[in-house]
Amino acid sequence: MKRRTSRRQFLAAGTALGLAPALSAGAQMTERYPARPIKMVVGYSPGGGNDLIARIVATRLQGKLGQPVIVENKPGAQSIVAAEMVAKAPPDGYTLLVAPSGPLTINPAVYAKLPYDPVKDFTPLSLLAEFPLLLIVGGEQPVKSVKELVEYGRANPKLANYASSATPFQLAAELFNQRTDSKFQHIPFRGSGDMAQAVMSGQVLMAFADSGPIVGPLKAGKLRALGITTARRPPDFPDVPTMAESGVSDMEISLWTGLVAPAGTPAEVQAMLQDAVVDTLEMPVVKEAMDAISVDARGTSSKEFAEIIVRDIARWKAVAAKANIKIE
Image (cartoon, rainbow, N blue to C red; front, side, top):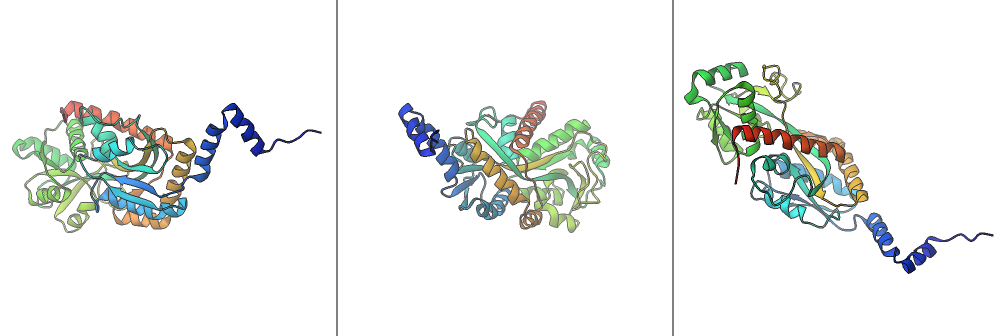
């Protein structure tokens, strides 16, 4: 009669061979995770769009994981401080980066050197949200369409300029220059509020902006949206033509925010987090909260998110190189 070997006996035998520590360590990590609070690091100050997205997700994600999910703000240097911190954190699933387009795809396009590699140093988990950009002008400007804007810029080169408050908006405008063979000049501003005010007042002709900070001025007629960078007109802006409808090809742009872990995070932990995040983003209460801040909740597989990162890095590197934008 054969004797059945119990799991305890198998591990005991493994110990004699020097194998059990590795087996049990991996098993314990999978069985115990998460055993303590999880930290989501945001590279921007509290109250901004990425911070709000993080807090919406964290509030519900902790119910899925059975542990507190804490949002920690580490602002500085276009989110480079936060990205470097998470890249160097232990790959155990307890320190995650709320990663917008900026640190993962824009920074690699414009910075000569970064203290992290956006592809090699992170394990993509899922997108969290995405949002298109609107091409806006002041409500008193004489242009009513993208075509008229391009023609106005060519006829009035001294007035042909654009405002931006961050590199993603600058690169979007430079892509517009390249797609329309225009020469709108860059006027930088410190924040989205200052940028919007400059366009409203006529100090600057136009800008690309996400909808969140400009919905009020748009409704009040202080700003006019000439185009949107989506493939189809979204329900929120049914009267705003897409860039393709306006005759500008290859101008589909969605900025996004995702969630990544340090490279080397165990596959089991990665899968658990990815599943929990996607489930969280499907919750009606989360979708409603995202809608309230003018972004679309969107979950993805880790593979799809990784492909988006690689694709966008290549795109923005090409735009930045052609526009000669480089930060040393």
